[in-house]
Amino acid sequence: MPEENKEQLQEMSFWDHLDVLRGVLVKIAVVVMVVAIAFFMFMPSIFDNIILAPCKGDFVLYRLFEKITTGVPGLPQFSTQGFHVELINIQLASQFFIHMSTSFWLALVFSFPVVIYLLWTFVSPALYENEKRGIKRAFAFGNLMFFLGVAVGYFVVFPVTLRFLADYHVSQMVPNQISLDSYMDTFLMLIFVMGIIFELPLLAWLLGNMGVLHRDFFRKYRRHAIVALLILAAFITPTGDPFTLTIVFLPIYLLYEMSAWLVKKN
Image (tube, rainbow, N blue to C red; front, side):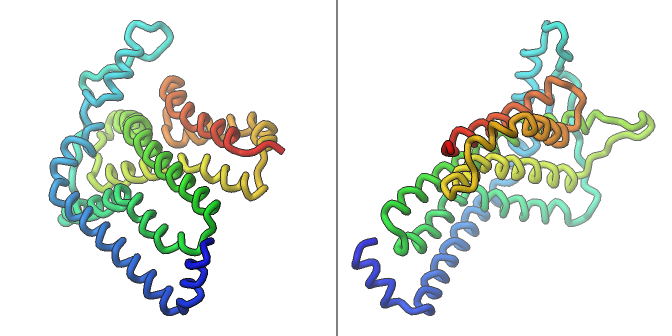
């Protein structure tokens, strides 16, 4: 750490640090609020073209599955025709509160890199140069993997889950009427869960640098991991179709192998 930084840190009292942190938190709140207002203004268009896009038969994943399965023996034939999910609202204030809450959650996600940067400006003066380089790489990698997980959740996991559950009937006498609240709860949950799952390589890298994890651990428990990940994929997408199960399982398994590659050998 440069001498001038050490002197500055020594001169600052606890209350000075607290005042700086408060300023950083105020900036974070302002950034999230501004982005949330922007999302709130454009939310009707975002709902029609993005959030509700998996409800339509011509969604990009459905068209891709139709091309892959058409004419291939042994694979269930996937069709984009006739699939459409109609949502209903059963509570008076639901649409307004979902408008607000979705704006906030999307703002929190898309302003996350800025939030991390602002927190970094508070923490960085107390770090050595080699620590700064390591944390910068970790933050950059963590952001990339989180957004990649969100993309996989939106383009793959949620549409597959929606397609299965919307067409599933315990009895043909019980029609599916999907509420807006139920749809949004599942949408946000699956997307954020996939974003968090995609942070596993970063967690493995950090634990590896701390000496807690080694590459032999992943090699020793690979078979156990495959079974566990298959169960996880089946839980995320409760379908007996091997094709869709494989589509969800492969990205999660690749995360396991990436984690093993990032961890040092014994």
